[in-house]
Image (tube, rainbow over all chains, first blue to last red; front, side, top):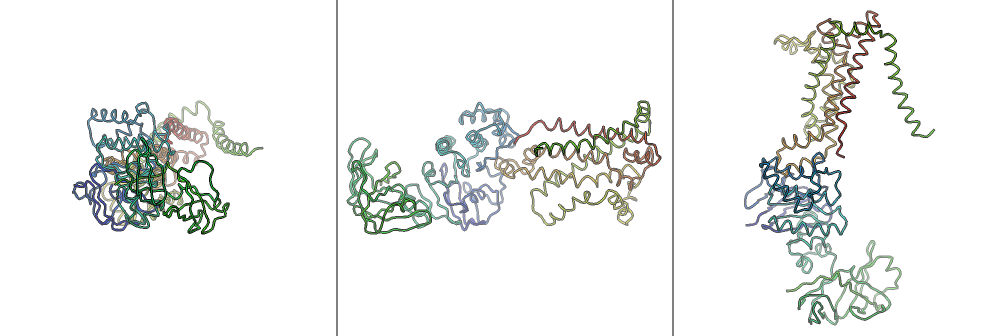
Length: 349
Length: 258
């Protein structure tokens, strides 16, 4: 039975949202600002009124107030209680729910240990760094044995490296405590790292709910396709393992040598901004470098999109207006492209 | 002169104004007279009455102000703006007018019912309490509301997601975080009640050893051209007021969270 079920939810920008989240699943809501992602979390938590119905494990939650829903919520700005220490913040939910002091102590010890904040337990939030605040807020959100955790852009305020590290840690914690989680994120790349499924939200509607691979390789609507950065999807006709960790793939007349542990790849996604384009032949070995013919030039506000026919494939390349201005590009002209291997994503049937 | 020095000079000038006025009292304060006036039954009664009414009124005002301030800070309801604006009545209407309002009310048929109900208000200690309450409760509410407005509502939302009922969230999050504002409001309410004169004398009169609070006693001594006695009472009321303010600032101002 699905743990969370939203039926015909409407509120503010949201229109007839139907969404199911399975037990122990990590679902990530991704979409532009104002799409209604946070509103969905607020509806699930019961923080706002709404039309439609919310069910947890088949039980109708309509009319049940927030404090009786048993939903942990990690807000974007964390909102750690400034008058309580780290340990008191974590213990807060257990205290107000009337747990025994022995249970509270054991749970707080377990969480400060799991999140590596044991040394901070007597500090006040004002004396914590961004990452320490995140860990404390997370420990507080899951402390009262919540089964569901809602996270509203929990890593948005952190630098990329810390955010990546914390996301990985979050995931392992969620698995460890058998929690069902709904994240709100801006960043599709971050979502891919942690999500079992991704829901793309646009203007209050769910455009697609699917696994990260499906979203990337089989976008159902133009909105999704545009949101994921209009990747070039190449079908792989042949694959040949060269050595451990390297594979040669042929798509049309393009041959690519890629770092890959498996023995077959059926599709490759290349983001338009992960392809270098030059009007002169680049120096160096010809590996993963191709020549092609410009078939279309689409000027946008700050970038220019250039469609290039390469070995039977039509690739979209993105570059800044400044870079475009420095090249003398026109339709029919021969150009050279280099693919950034590190950012490639693969799909294997 | 730099702007910093100029600004500090202004603040010192303001301080000197008050300090000069206070120091001038000592010109009329002779040691024996001070003790004699302080220990007289009439002065001791005034001090006790003033401390008693100011303290009771502070408790009453803060008790009413906390829930009122929370409602005005957090909820949208019909008439909220009208209530919010009406809170400023004690600031824009003179205390004498407020006292007159109370007297007028007790001369209406509805007010008469209260008087006939057994509790005599006019010219009694109850009158002092009511007059001081009317002049302070609006200001207390306004001050506490300002403190609560500063607390992000998200704290309460977090508390609710952690299992706290709205009432528990109020007592465990909102009240502790607005503690400084509530204490400040209480102190100012107490100081204002202690010094309240216009409304009190209008409602409770100036009966010695019955309704004579310290400000009324000062007025009565001044009316009788008793400058020395007036100076002593002024010194007492200043000592009580400033002593309390400095004390509370010292004890309540030690911890900050932000």
